[in-house]
Image (cartoon, rainbow, N blue to C red; front, top):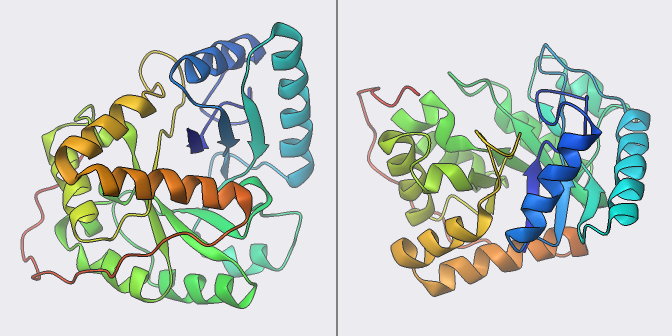
Amino acid sequence: MIDLHCHILPGLDDGARDEDEAVEMARQAAADGIRTVVATPHHRNGRFVNGRSAWDTAVRKLTGRLAAEGVPLRVLPGQELHCGERIFEWLQDEEEWLPLGGSKYVLLEFPPGDVPAHAAEVVHELAVLGCTAVVAHPEHNRRIAAEPDTLYRLVEAGALAQVTSLSLMGRHGPRVRSTALELCRRNLVHFVATDAHNRRWRPFLLREAYERVRRELGEERARMYLRNAEAVVAGEEAERPEPLPGKRRWWRLWAR
């Protein structure tokens, strides 16, 4: 399996605190059946700033440590780029942003409470740059949870989306789980990833998430998510099932 979203690089954000914890996270990932992770530290979210050189150095250092200790996990560089007001400025500077695993896919993080008004414009700008926006954990976004057509419109505009393994398993509560499954059923989700931050509270558990997808959504849907993760690291096109519109909701009860 391939995990496209995790915070395993030590000391860069709120993920692994140090190299020892990063190694233990890598052991957990490998035991879960994950053979490749894309390390995606937060960038420009108001707390963390990680330039391209910081990512490259951290990946090389951790890769050397894993090889020395015999941990069978490949670590690729990536980023979780905050969709802030200055994102158009950042996208003009190659030192500011890094696609997933050297691919054309860019992981975007929205604020938890809303979808920025310029989100569709960002999706378009990335397309102009030859890249595809991937919306990280939309099931946690209160605006999308209350009105899933917000994500539908972004997918129609060319974006893809990734739900979190723990969300599908109910670890973030029944409402988040319900939202995640609804987005999957409406073909608004294209990847499952872990967003792992540590071994205990926010672990990998990707295998269990895929088992949940098989039970809830069927074997073919699980295989599509697996194929799409492989497509990203191979630099290929991800599958895009036809997105399904839904009824507008006038209530907002899906707060985390």
